[in-house]
Image (tube, rainbow, N blue to C red; front, top):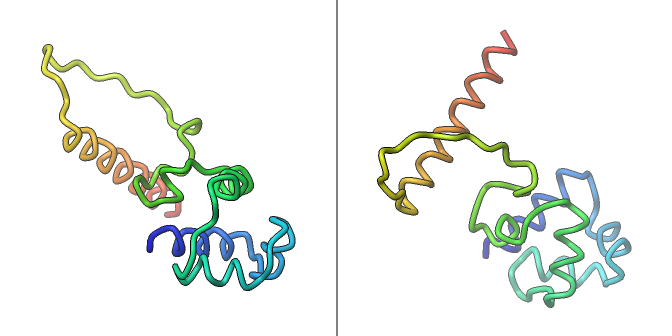
Length: 110
Protein backbone atom coordinates (compact mmCIF):
# COMPACT_ATOMS: atom_id res chain seq x y z
CA UNK A 1 0.00 0.00 0.00
CA UNK A 2 2.70 2.48 0.96
CA UNK A 3 4.70 1.64 -2.15
CA UNK A 4 1.92 2.81 -4.46
CA UNK A 5 1.39 5.99 -2.46
CA UNK A 6 5.10 6.78 -2.52
CA UNK A 7 5.40 6.23 -6.28
CA UNK A 8 2.45 8.56 -6.87
CA UNK A 9 3.82 11.17 -4.44
CA UNK A 10 7.26 11.13 -6.06
CA UNK A 11 5.78 11.32 -9.56
CA UNK A 12 3.58 14.27 -8.61
CA UNK A 13 6.45 16.08 -6.87
CA UNK A 14 8.35 15.99 -10.17
CA UNK A 15 5.20 17.12 -12.01
CA UNK A 16 5.20 13.99 -14.14
CA UNK A 17 2.10 12.41 -15.63
CA UNK A 18 1.70 8.67 -15.36
CA UNK A 19 2.44 8.48 -19.09
CA UNK A 20 5.65 10.52 -18.78
CA UNK A 21 6.90 8.35 -15.89
CA UNK A 22 5.99 5.25 -17.89
CA UNK A 23 7.95 6.57 -20.88
CA UNK A 24 11.00 7.27 -18.70
CA UNK A 25 10.86 3.79 -17.17
CA UNK A 26 9.98 1.99 -20.39
CA UNK A 27 6.66 0.58 -19.19
CA UNK A 28 3.02 1.25 -20.02
CA UNK A 29 0.92 3.96 -18.38
CA UNK A 30 -1.34 1.14 -17.17
CA UNK A 31 1.59 -0.41 -15.28
CA UNK A 32 2.24 2.87 -13.44
CA UNK A 33 -1.49 3.20 -12.66
CA UNK A 34 -1.55 -0.34 -11.23
CA UNK A 35 1.53 0.37 -9.07
CA UNK A 36 -0.02 3.56 -7.72
CA UNK A 37 -3.31 1.84 -6.91
CA UNK A 38 -1.44 -1.11 -5.33
CA UNK A 39 -2.97 -3.56 -7.80
CA UNK A 40 0.52 -4.71 -8.72
CA UNK A 41 4.13 -4.01 -7.79
CA UNK A 42 7.20 -3.34 -9.90
CA UNK A 43 9.79 -6.12 -10.02
CA UNK A 44 13.08 -5.68 -8.15
CA UNK A 45 14.95 -4.30 -11.16
CA UNK A 46 12.23 -1.71 -11.73
CA UNK A 47 12.23 -0.79 -8.04
CA UNK A 48 15.94 -0.02 -8.36
CA UNK A 49 15.28 2.13 -11.44
CA UNK A 50 12.55 4.06 -9.59
CA UNK A 51 14.82 4.49 -6.57
CA UNK A 52 17.64 5.80 -8.75
CA UNK A 53 15.36 8.04 -10.80
CA UNK A 54 14.02 9.83 -7.73
CA UNK A 55 17.28 9.59 -5.74
CA UNK A 56 15.62 7.83 -2.83
CA UNK A 57 16.36 4.78 -0.71
CA UNK A 58 14.38 1.58 -1.05
CA UNK A 59 13.41 1.97 2.63
CA UNK A 60 11.81 5.32 1.77
CA UNK A 61 10.06 3.84 -1.25
CA UNK A 62 8.53 1.09 0.89
CA UNK A 63 7.57 3.49 3.69
CA UNK A 64 10.01 2.06 6.23
CA UNK A 65 11.52 5.50 6.82
CA UNK A 66 10.87 9.12 5.98
CA UNK A 67 14.54 9.63 5.20
CA UNK A 68 14.61 9.91 1.44
CA UNK A 69 18.30 9.19 0.88
CA UNK A 70 20.71 7.92 3.51
CA UNK A 71 23.54 9.70 1.70
CA UNK A 72 21.91 13.01 2.68
CA UNK A 73 22.05 12.25 6.41
CA UNK A 74 24.28 14.44 8.48
CA UNK A 75 26.00 12.80 11.42
CA UNK A 76 25.11 14.03 14.89
CA UNK A 77 27.21 12.71 17.75
CA UNK A 78 25.85 12.25 21.27
CA UNK A 79 27.37 11.03 24.52
CA UNK A 80 25.29 8.38 26.28
CA UNK A 81 27.27 6.90 29.22
CA UNK A 82 27.65 3.46 27.64
CA UNK A 83 23.93 2.73 27.25
CA UNK A 84 22.81 1.15 23.98
CA UNK A 85 20.02 2.86 22.01
CA UNK A 86 16.91 0.86 21.24
CA UNK A 87 15.36 1.05 17.78
CA UNK A 88 12.47 3.00 19.31
CA UNK A 89 14.84 5.52 20.89
CA UNK A 90 16.70 6.00 17.62
CA UNK A 91 13.40 6.66 15.84
CA UNK A 92 12.51 9.23 18.51
CA UNK A 93 15.86 10.96 17.96
CA UNK A 94 15.12 11.09 14.21
CA UNK A 95 11.69 12.61 14.89
CA UNK A 96 13.26 15.21 17.18
CA UNK A 97 15.84 16.11 14.52
CA UNK A 98 13.02 16.61 12.00
CA UNK A 99 11.09 18.72 14.53
CA UNK A 100 14.11 20.98 15.10
CA UNK A 101 14.67 21.25 11.33
CA UNK A 102 11.03 22.29 10.78
CA UNK A 103 11.25 24.89 13.57
CA UNK A 104 14.33 26.35 11.90
CA UNK A 105 12.55 26.55 8.55
CA UNK A 106 9.55 28.29 10.12
CA UNK A 107 11.85 30.77 11.87
CA UNK A 108 13.67 31.48 8.60
CA UNK A 109 10.35 32.27 6.87
CA UNK A 110 9.55 35.05 9.37
